[in-house]
Image (cartoon, rainbow, N blue to C red; front, side, top):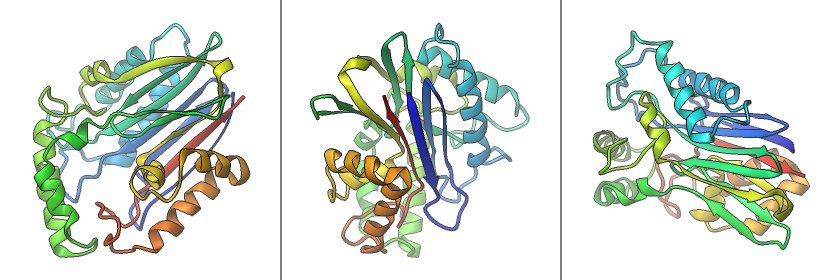
Length: 269
């Protein structure tokens, strides 16, 4: 498996995405925004995704370890290295997870929350694996955020109200699941596999990239994969930024940030 990847922050704040790969593994993490609210952890989201990513690469290097078991183990290990933090805080640093691993002629995938894995079939079809349970909760508060332009005080206040409410249902049966301090989240992933012979290429990405198709609607999956082959991950991310620059305050495409962190790992055989 040949993997090339890139990642770029969406603004002045540190990039809260993380990406790593080996000849058999690609991992993308998208740290959840804190919206300026307390998390109970002194380290922060970039620290969390960096450590989770490193431990996840290590645990999944063993092909006998299943993807959910590897994620659960990585979450346990990260929690163990900062016990002084309030890991029971509902806002403790968390992340979405997207993983693709080649193993014995098969591609295994895992998705937790809305960072997708997209498989391009040899016949030109595209299979999108994603977890959109977060979109099903608190629709009224989501709509409130989206009615305001980004970079305004009303937008920021509405976003904080949404994040506070999301924290109450995050990693509960009534809400949605992300990778945080509780390894139980690993049991709520979407997983599956595909034969390598049926896949031409694959993209593992954060939603800061996939929104070019899913939210902005300015590209198709076919066009995205064509761009990846021509210009690579950096070219795709630049296309996302150029698109967002045409709507800097979120009037055409209401969103939480004018530009989100964007990460993609492109896998070919």
